Every structure is written in structure tokens, then in C-alpha cells.
Image 1 (tube, helix red, strand yellow):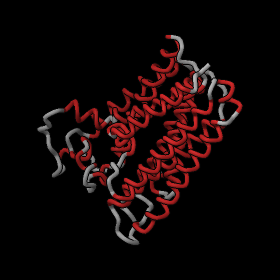
Image 2: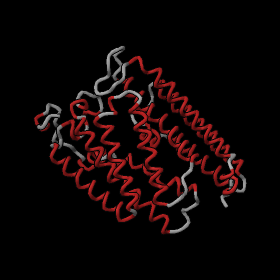
Image 3: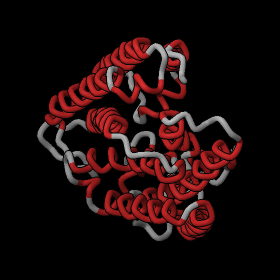
Image 4: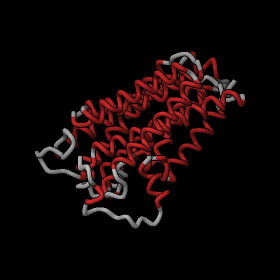
Length: 308
């Protein structure tokens, strides 16, 4: 790590929109992942009072603050690698627009604020956030450079948000929910790594900062597609489970959600294989009109199932 990025040849202190730069650096768009906290609320039909909505919003903000703090850590640790990357070299730290000391100060503030809110909400939730931070650090220092282990770590980081929702909403642990979430986000983590490896593809040579080689692309694709399909199978089995039958008047409409999910995963991997996928599938989903349309169709299917 270069202790003096302000001397970097990439430095550009004339940023026209520093707020936008900070929004990108803190990955505010990644806060969309925190919507997973609301999944246990929805599954247990707990979005019916302002108190329940308040619990979700508070947990959403707390996890977002902590996550943004860890993104800054990750940028500090990866600064040398990012400077050689075609797009990551434009980040505030890698480009030299802000010194490491400022990034560390902001990260510390966000971390303290996030944990304070979490502990006020639920001490067990704060403990869970501690586990999230620990896994994030393990990923940044170790798992990120281990092929396959990095994808598993990313998947568990996604899953931790669902667990947070279970803790805050005080709902029962659902095997179906955990299985579906893990398999789906294992597939998306494979998408993320596939795109990154493809950008730095060098045949049999190791990709800088990662444990993959260019000829690992097929394996990543096969793992990602198979786990994505498996998540749809789990969703299909869940649609016919006693839990759904007890919660919905017309559970058959849940099959529409399965079809939508299957199409979205298939299309995501089609675009990935063709080289049209963003290096972050979350950003892709937020900007993709087809994804939003499919989300509306899935919501209509759920409403037609008529929640009790």
C-alpha cells in the first residue's frame, strides 16, 4: 500500500463532483443488498405496522454504515491492485484524490455509528454485525486470493443480511429462505468473479490480486449457472411447502415467481457469457429495465397468491 497516494500519477484533485465521488467510494448503491434484511419480514408478513417498518429501516441503515466502512478498508488494502485496473483506478483512493488518513477517519466514524445504532436496536444484531465485519476482514486479507473460497465468503456475506432480518424481526429460522438465498448469491458472486477474471484473462497466468487463472472461466460459469438453477429448484419446492400453503390462499401463483427467477438467472448468465455484464451484478440489476419489469411481475404473482 502506497502511504502517499497524493503523489500518484493518477491523482486528480479537480473532481467536479466530490459528493458523487464519495457516494461511489462508499458504495451507496450497494446498500440495495440490505433489502435482504426485509425478506424475513416479508416472509412472515411483518410489514403491517409502523413499528415493524421502523425496525427494518433502522437495521437497514446500521448495516449500510458498517458495510460502507468495510468498503473503504477494502479499497485501502487493494490500492496497488486497483491502480492497475481499467475502472477501479478511478476510485478516490486509487486515483489519489483523497489520502489514506482521510479514508481511515471516515471508515472509523461510519463503523462506530453503525454499531451504535445496531446495539441500540438489538444487542444480538450488533453481535451479528461483528461477525459480518470479521468475515469481511477475512475476505479482504485472505479469502479474496483463494479461488472458490472467495465466492463462498461473498455468499455468506449476503446470507448474513437475511440472518440479520431474522434477528431483528424475531422470526423463525427458515431452511427454505437460507438455502435459496445462499444458492442465488453464490451464483451472483460467480458472475462477479467471472467478469473480473475475464477482464484480466491471461491464459494460464494468475490474475493479479486473485487466485484465478484465465482458463478457470468455464468452471466459474458452470458453478454459477448450476447454483442459480438450484436456487430456483429450492424456490419451487418452497412454493409447494406447508409453510406457503399456510400463508397464502392461492399458493399456486408462486410458480410464477419461480418462472421469473429462472428467466432472470438464465438471462444474467447469457449476458455475462457474452461480455455484456457489469462488473458488479448488483449495479446491473439496479439499472436494468428488464430486471425491474420481472420484479413487478413477481410481485403481481405474490399478490395474486393472496397473503392471509
